[in-house]
Length: 441
Image 1 (spheres, rainbow, N blue to C red):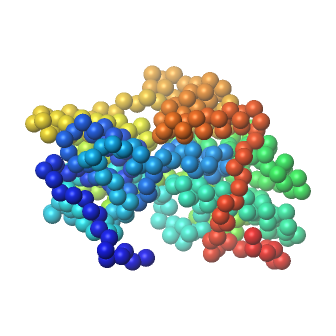
Image 2: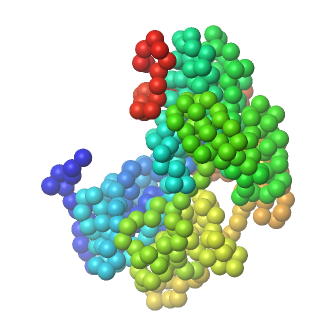
Image 3: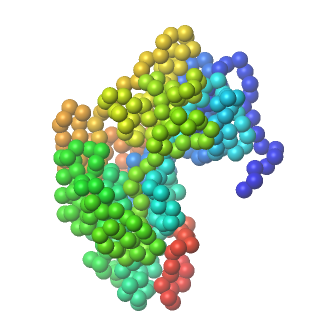
C-alpha cells in the first residue's frame, strides 16, 4: 500500500541529543521508560502501537486469554513526557554514514540509535512450507491459531469424510522449547476439559496432539531435570512426543518427517527464532542473524549505534554464542543501557553489561510447571506453577492487564472454563482445503 505523500515522521528539531529506539518490545520499552530523567529527545519507532507480552501468546492462541490482556498501548507508557515521541512505522534499514534510520514514511536523523527490534520466526530455510504453517510470534499469529483450530472443529462436525476428519482433528506442534511445551499442554487441557462440552457430537479421543522436537530432549535451554519432568507431564497428558525428529516438508495435508508422516491440517511452528536484523549494517557486524555488540551493547564498527535484546549478540567467555534470546536479557540490557546513556552524557565512562540470571521456567498445564533457579535448585508441580504465575503477572504491562489475567486464571482454575472460544474473524489461507460438501464458514 503506497504511503501518502503528505505524511512525514514530523519529529521537531531541538537542542537535545536525539535517541531513536527501534522496537517497543521488552528491551526497547524498558530502555525508553528508564530514560525519563535523561536530557534527550526520545523517539520510539514500532510497526505496532502496542507492547506484547510474548510469553503469554500461547494462552491467546488456545483461548485462555483475550489479546488485550497481554498487550498495552505504547503511548500510554510515556504520557506527560514532552520529550518523548512515538511513531507507528516500519523501519526498513539504517544509513549509518548519514546517521539516519530508514522507515516506510521517510528517514529520521539520530544522534544515538538503539536497535531493539527483537526476533522473528526461524523457518530454517524451509521456504516451501513457510506459508502453510502457523507461527506464534505476534498477537495476530495467536488469533490466527485460535480461529484456525476452532474453524476446524466447526467443520469436523459436518464432514462425513474420515480422512478429512482425521486431518482436522490432528494438531502438530513443532519445537520442544517453552512455547511448544506450553502450547501442547494447553491444547491437551482443552481436549480433556473444554472441547467435549462445546462439541458433544465430536469424539475427542480421536483428537491427537503431536509434539515434534529435533533434539533428544525437551526444553533445551533449561536443565536436564526440567526437560525430563516436562516430558513426563506431556506424555501423561496424552500428547505424542517425537524426539530426534525433523520436519522435512508440509503440503497443507501431510507433514513429512525424517521418520514418517502425519496427516493434519494444523501445524503450529514454534521451532525457534532468529534476530530481526535490518538492512544497512556492515556485514562484519552481523553473525548468525544477530548483531555483534561489545560489552556496552555498542554495535561493533560504530560509535553511536547500539543493539539490545534478541537481535544483539554479546559474546564473552560465559556466553560464547551470545546471551539467550529471552525477555529477561532484553529487559536488563534496556535498563543497563539507560544508565550508560546517563554516564555518556555526563562525560563518565560506561559500565559493561553483566547478565543476572534469575532462572527460567515453563508451564505445561494446571499445577504442572518446571522452574530452574540460578543457585542450582529445581522445582516442579504446583509450587513451580505458582512461581510461574507470580512472575508472569508481575511483568505484565499495566495494572488492568494484571487484574484481568489473574481473574481469568482464577476462574479457569476452579471451573476449567475458558470463555474466549470465539471466532471473531475467520482465518483464511490459500492452502486450506474444505471437505467436499462443506460450506465455507
